[in-house]
Image 1 (cartoon, rainbow, N blue to C red):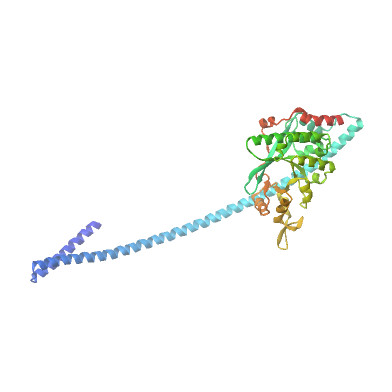
Image 2: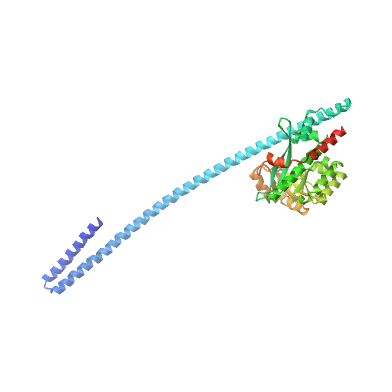
Length: 422
């Protein structure tokens, strides 16, 4: 269509130029003048055509640009609407997730409180049962205890039905595993796992914790060596009871075994509860000092009071203190425009971890369960964390556990001593 229009206009311009030249020729002009008039008229026609065509093209271009601008405006408006909807959706999802997380955390705390109360009740009942059984046994001159739980504990130790569980301890904020905490779990003859609250109340009064500590120590040493072969330089927290530290018969053997493995001193940390640490006497303190002289370190857990004796911790070579994340956060309060811990009102909360480091002690926030707790813990400059958020305690595989089985006398000796005492 465009080509046809151009052909018709060209023909019209030729006719117009021819008419002008013929008129001049009839008016007496020479043929040369008529030819010049023809050429000039034709040039003027094409020049006029170019001007008019350019004007129309410019007008069309402006119209197209305006159309594009309108389309762009519509597109931007739609994008803004979509962005607003996406923002609203993300906020809604985040609020729902936060609400569900808060509800789940609340339920977990309620469950933990319930389990704690049940454990305390069970421990109290078992303590009374063991005391009554021992009283009856002495009255009848019996050679063996009659308490079923005590027999189950003794059988589990004698038959090596003791499992090792490990839970990671991570550095913050990187969340890289730098330690593991070890836990021992006993199984009865049916394979049921006995929880600590179930057997500690029986094992401690009967002197069986030395056997548990023996077995746990041997397996921790083997696990540390296994990790070292894999070029994994991590430490393991190994629980030790106050009874083991105060046992003058058991401790020399315990110390002799550690002297043969003192190259692991930087990787094996012995852990005591805060109450046990505060109740230690001269014998326990002396034995802790002998372990420290070999390079072994100590850790404090089950902390219920943050008003710690920092100098006493340093003297006892305590290098780590584990504090429940919830305990720390519940102690936070604002006084005179600054955030403090209720147990240490004269100290900024953010300076608590730094003060501990001055005495060579690192704070580990344990029982961490939510990302919100992590954010608040990082504000307090705490460098390590432990809890289900980073990993639950996992049982060592049977194949690995078999490699860490100690010699028979390693566990049997404490059991024989106990039987002899009866």
